[in-house]
Image 1 (cartoon, rainbow, N blue to C red):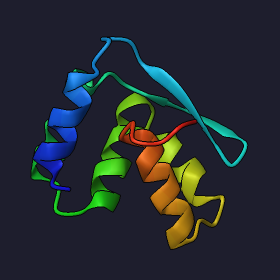
Image 2: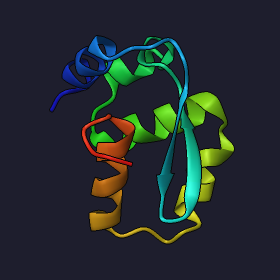
Image 3: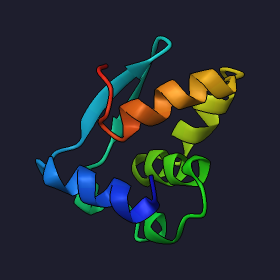
Image 4: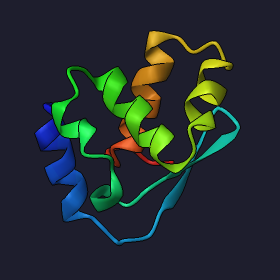
Length: 88
């Protein structure tokens, strides 16, 4: 899924309120899709998109996530939650 498709999908469910997701025992605040940084449109990969979204609320969130020593499988699960395509 391209960055533009992710933003478009997220916009269709926009509530203008941040939402909190839980992942591996840590809570992350995800801004409303219309409050995502514009850079997500130009992001070249999913890792960059998720990093930008997490850092949009608080730049420490990405560092917190990395401190959990995630695997690629773990990142895929987080990405689905950030993009609103999986349950919390």
